Image 1 (cartoon, one colour):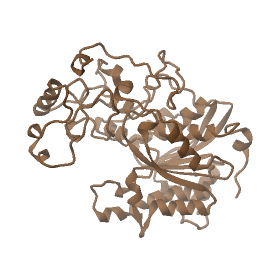
Image 2 (cartoon, rainbow, N blue to C red):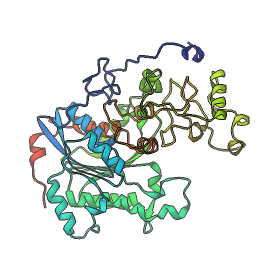
Image 3 (cartoon, rainbow, N blue to C red):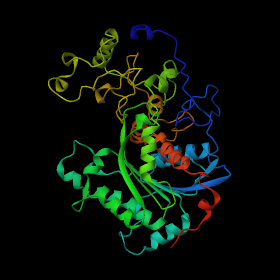
Image 4 (cartoon, rainbow, N blue to C red):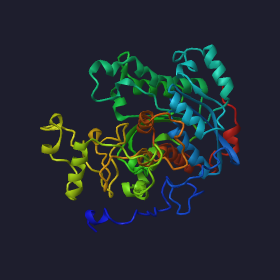
Length: 417
C-alpha cells in the first residue's frame, strides 16, 4: 500500500507481539498493547520487594521501568528516596508514585555532600539511616558538558561533578546494583582534568563492585526511537555480572516502529493540552503540505527551507517527516516544532503532540503528566525523560539471571557497615 493511500485509511489499530521486553501486564488494556494501558498497576504490591533510590529522578522514567519489571516478576517496588531539583518533575513524580516513602525537591548534594573515600558526613549518615538497605540505586546526572554544540570549556563544567555524586551515593548506601544513565557524550566530560565516567568507575571498583559501561540503543529495547544512552552498571559480588547484562541486552533486541507506538492516536480528540496539535506558522504549514504532496520525499529540499537552514549543513532532519515503518528520531523538547528536527507527523500537516512524544519515549497512557503546569514545561519534561524500557530491560535481565530472582534472603540481608 502506498504512503499516499495510507494517509486516508482508518486510524490504525496495532497489535504488538506479546513477547517483547517492554510488554508488561495488560491491566485496563483489552488489546494488550503496553503503551495503551490506562490503569496503573499496583507497583507497591508483591510477595517481596526491592528497595529503590532514584537520584536526578526527573518525572520518573527509570523508576517506572524498574517498577514495571519488578511487577512483572511479582515483586513490589519500595521507593525509599527520589530526588530532583525541578518542581514540575517532582510534582509529576509524586502523582505517579504516591506510595513512595520520600520524594524531595532538592539537590542531590543535600543528601550526599561528602568527598569520595572520606568518612560519611552528618547528612549522609541521616540519609543512610532513613533509606535503610538499598537494592537498586539509579540516576541520570544532568552534566552541562553534554551538548556537542558546547565549547571546550563547558566540557569541564563544574556541574560534571554531579556524575560523581552517584559514586558517592553508592559509597554511602551500599546498594546491590548501581545504574547511571546519560548521553553518550558524557564519555568526553571531565572534572578536575579527569573523565567523570572513568573516575566513577574506578571508585566503584574500589568499593568492590564489578563495573561495565557501554552505549545502548533504546530502539533495541522496544522503544520506537533511535535514542542512544550511555549506561554504567555496577553490581556487587553475588549478583549477575554487568558484562552478562549487556550481553543479554544485545542478544534479545526487540525493535518497534512509529506506527506501533502512536498509530492509534491519529484521530484522537485534541481537547486537552496533552493531545493538542501544535500550531504552525503559515510558511511551515506550506512546507508540511509540500511533503504530504510528495509521498516519496521525507527531507524538505533546501530551496524550501528557511535561508538560515539552506546550503551545506548536517541538519537534514530539520523540517523532515517521520515514517510509520521506522523508529522516530531522538525525541527532544523541540518535538512540537518541525524546525527543531524530524518531527512532522507521517500523514498530517503538523508536528507531534505531547501524547505522541510521550508514547515514543515509552510512557504508557496511565502515566499522568497533568501536574505539569505549562506546555513548555511539559515538552521539556518529556524530551528530557529516560525511556522506562531502559530501566525495565536492565532489571529484567538482572532478574532473569537468578534462579530465584531477588529472593527473601537477598532482600532481607543487612548491608555491611
